[in-house]
Image 1 (spheres, rainbow, N blue to C red):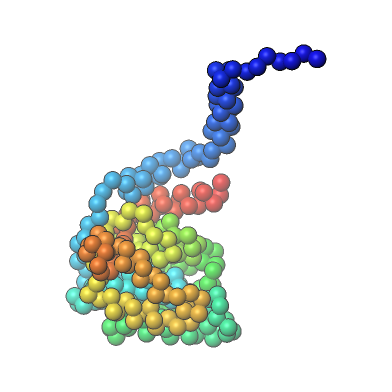
Image 2: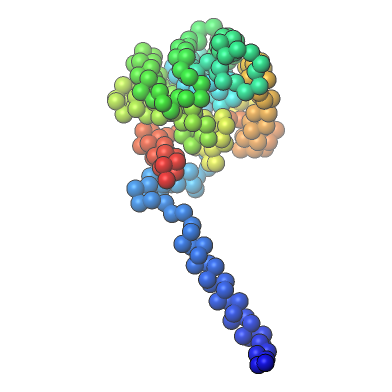
Length: 287
């Protein structure tokens, strides 16, 4: 039997390097790459998200339209800002896309869940924005909004034309919940159709935090209003503790009060930014 010569440290190092290089080549070949058609939107969105400090100045708006996928999103994502603006005399209008009838953990028939959650939304909106606030309920299927984008666009277009808002609040387009993204897609379609001009769009966070908001607004003085609005959603509270959302508000206040208050984060986007972000999500799903 022939005994192979002993392998010295230098030879062993060479073998290890070859194996490592082979592994790295395989990893490089397997790593997902941004498709060419998504490269430009990805670069534009990256420039929006990276390399700037957020503004701490609240918007100046006499009329605000808030788009709400499910009852409770208005309080989670923008309850503080809406309360601030209402205190300053702004008129608040809302479009409620679903009645939240697919609430997990609610031990009631779907029609009863829908009735209760509509009522809870009305109480929440009144707490936040006063009795003058108005809302339009679309009663589209909870959990299936992506299939109703045209209806969303038509309803949002009608609300934009009727209210002529200075500011629109909508879920930010990289929210993980498909219903949230569908509402913002409907807004994009309405904006592209040219229903209004000069309206600012701020997108809010509900299920998915915005990594680098363009605006962080201190809402410490109206935190009690936001909390009361969250508490109004009793039925949703059977699924999860809505007050957990206040943890994000506390963390956001690191930018405003060194963590000793409450704040909400927003990402201002124009139609191009909305389209880019939605394209990236849709592209990722399609790929």
